[in-house]
Amino acid sequence: MKRLRCTVFHAALALCAGCSLESTEQADLSAESAAALLVAHRGASAYAPEHTMAAYQLAIEQGADFIEPDLQLTRDGVLIALHDLTLGRTTDVREVFPDRFREELVRGETVRRWYANDFTLEEIRRLDAGSWFGERFQGVRIPTLSEVIELASGQAGIFPETKAPDVYGERGYDMERLLLDELERHGLHKRNADPSTPVIIQSFSAESLRILRHDLATDLPLTFLISGPAADEWLTAEGLAEISEFATGIGPTRSLLLEHPGAVDLAHQAGLTVIPWTFAARGPDGSTTVVEEMAHFLFELGVDGLFTNNPDLFPRTPPDEGS
Ligand code: G3P
Ligand code: CA
Image (cartoon, rainbow, N blue to C red; front, top):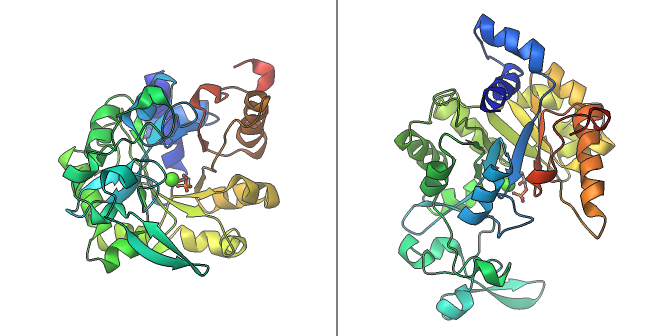
């Protein structure tokens, strides 16, 4: 299985602009290029609290090719795995630090927000990031990126996302540099440095990816996440050609690909991989639905992988071949 995963990763890289693979790797690609990447969205987040070691560990056990840490920064400049800029949704910060909020006006109402960046790592380590999801996860902590890398090392790839890099830039942090430095500390800052732990960096910010590719000259694969009003322009031949100047793949929403089914071929023609998000079982019959949905995207639309909260339900083969 690990041999297959490495080859699958090369298959994704082969679609990248500017990649040059050895001839043996090229031969592998033709044999197995139909295989696609299973990216565990925030870990196995359907079954364990998102962005915790419990969720990442379970994702690896369920066969994820990649685990996905979203990245935020602590006050002391440490990259942590957390989706939101704030701590309120997924931790007990209100109880532990009742006075450490900022008040903001939202639609005419004053709201209290506990920003992760207002806390040091030592303070963030005191928070319970599991109880909101279920009692049995009480006391699990927000991990650092370094801890996530250590867990994944030799077992799965990591697909880190620079979250709100502009916000952190305004606060004086260089998120892209910090990310590459952390990867370098683990020997993962170069493409194919450790084939058992491949790295793809993703962002909604084209600027963040341009910094990584052009200013910091990383050769790691970069995925540009696409959603919102600008999506229609990015998913044209012209838009995709522009993306190929700073990224090696796109990560559109599921619904965007349904609206623009031709975008997969257009992206491939531009040398870009296509890894949509997010596939999640919903409702009482959700597991069946999400398997069929993922199969449609993988085997009919021809995407190169997908982000899912349910790694255990990812179909490795088309339905008529069994899974
Ligand atoms: O990174 C792909 C997908 O995770 C983007 O959505 O909000 O879950 O980070 P979000
Ligand atoms: Ca994400």
